[in-house]
Length: 315
Image (cartoon, rainbow, N blue to C red; front, side, top):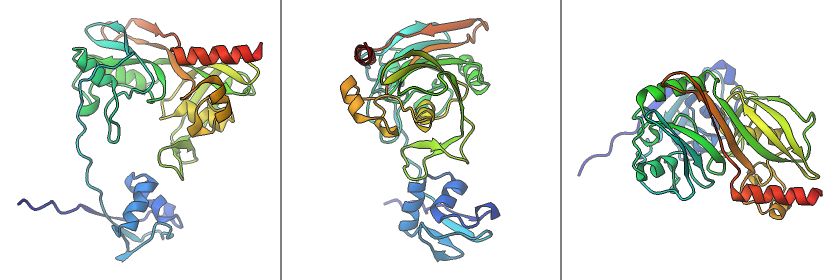
């Protein structure tokens, strides 16, 4: 019988800038854990401060030595070739494929997700994508939330992967979304510039937090209704849940987005079981010759029906 590997133990001094922070918050900042994972490690006795066990809510002192038994690396995630109902191929050439991702589909496999994926759907359809990137997300240059539908581009060649990633990093890609949000933003067109990071209490959520990454969202009114507004949204940055977090922080969550405080009564009235958010347009320089290309997508049936209902309510 083989002997299991010894756990990795990392030791670091607490930076002076974290003086007085809770242990779980300090661990999250120093080691990149979520606060939930940090609290679990402390509860399991896998964290010591200056040689003594410590609780998640203990306050740390600058210069104190933290010893942390690192969690085991997650098992590798395997791509399963599986047809994806409703996923449409919008464009296909030697370098890339543009797809219309339906709701309920992830961009790629990940721990804890056993549902359909864009990568699995492409594999089932016989597509070969770039090998760059982690094994489970090869060819993926950007993502959409499972609960968000719309346009995604996937690289098929290594050159396309590199050049598309560069465009996303340099923020030259034109990513446009339509969102039905509750109420009426004031002003009706504007910019939300607020940093986004992990939610301090809920590991599965994100929030506007002072220590978050710079995040900029531009929005314009498309149509106003009695209870909601349809917005055209352009992302300058691409943080996880960015539109959902920014609109909720602006007190106008996406209709149906119960995770970020949307009114469940309105969601039921509109027949929504997810956030009303769709990636309607995607523009970028084609990696083969640098020409500008743009792709557009119509609303899926559930979002169109909800929009018809909110229009009827306003008539």
